Image (cartoon, rainbow, N blue to C red; front, side):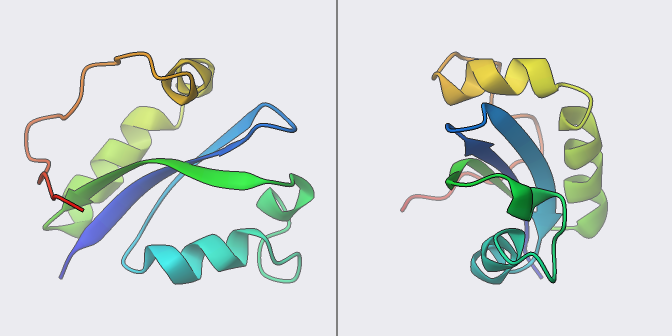
Length: 95
């Protein structure tokens, strides 16, 4: 099973959010639904600005925990600054 670590960014609110999921499209939809996500639905205009793919839930959870305290750095990521990607264990996938 594949897990995705993702970073969302709201340009309007200059706000970032980090999470992990097995279904990015469905999870993205819930972020904009107030009934399902009270925190992220407050901020309009979410964009997915970064994704990483992992083979295990544990790898994805560790990477999510790495990003969570780094909200100041996430604004830099949204501006395209290099923060040292990909980490070891990440699976690069071509679109």
